[in-house]
Amino acid sequence: MRDSEGAWREALYGPEGFFTRGSLPADHFRTAPLIGPELAEALLVLLDRVDFALGRPERVDFVDLGAGGGELSAAVRSLASGSLGRRLHVTAVDVGPVRSLPLVRWERSLPSAVTGLLVAHEWLDAIPCPVVSWPCSDPWLDRWWPLRPGWRAEIGAPRDAAWADAVSRVRGAALAIDYGHVRADRVAGRYPEGTFTAYRGGRRVEPVFDGSCDLTAHVALDACAAAAGGEWVLVSQRDALAALGLSGEVAGSGMAWLESLARSGRVAELRDPAGLGAFGWLLHAVDVPVSSLLPPLPPWTP
Ligand SMILES: C[S@@+](CC[C@H](N)C(=O)[O-])C[C@H]1O[C@@H](n2cnc3c(N)ncnc32)[C@H](O)[C@@H]1O
Image (cartoon, rainbow, N blue to C red):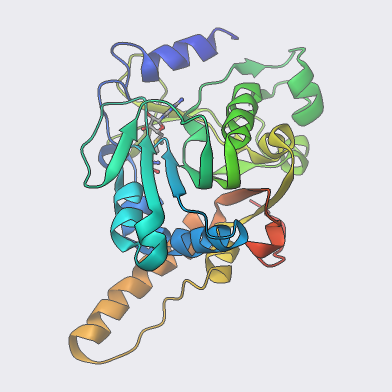
């Protein structure tokens, strides 16, 4: 079963892989950056706080790691204004085909140093890892997901390493936004069959390793946090967006009212406790106090 990691990697990133061939998230599933500009608006509030905490440096980075179609990068670039907008450098990083976006640099690998905010939106869940079943002896499982008879699980070590590497390049803040789980729920047996699954054309399908579908698994965000270390918080998207002032208030009249109504629907989707609002925000603060970025919020309970 350990070879499942290799098969998963080949199916997504091999020569005929799902992402290598340029499959876009927009064609197969709905992610928050595809809903509208509201996530980018909230991230710009966070970036402004990072910028302030860093003392408004000459150059500020926004790095979109695992950028997919680049929608988040494009929205951040077009919404940024004033002094921050002038100093801002937006970089989209993805191993898939290069996409051309105005004023966004496209890279296939992470820059060695990032000063500002790095965001990995639904990136960690796309990192292949071993899919195993009981009995299986492994130090990561022992610590984070001790198996019981009949259980299946994913070994999150490759995601931990990838996240620790990303965070180590950052001065400011690094934020992973993803669906996932925490140890208490894993140990309690909430995922006896693990979470490895596949999507194609907007529907959940039986996983096959032929590059025809996206393969994914929930992220052990608590393990990623421990691996990257430093000062971090793990909170829900619902709470984080509220703390960043994203409101879905309906106001005005005529067209303005209609627009605010549509926006309110998009914000509600981002904050839906049974949907995207339940996503985890793992925020690492590097060389800045985490309290300068978010107020105290309840811990994430996925
Ligand atoms: C699930 S998609 C998310 C896309 C986008 N962030 C969104 O939320 O709509 C994951 C993306 O991560 C990219 N990816 C996976 N591993 C990567 C790596 N090591 N470096 C850069 N991009 C990677 C994939 O090619 C894919 O486009």
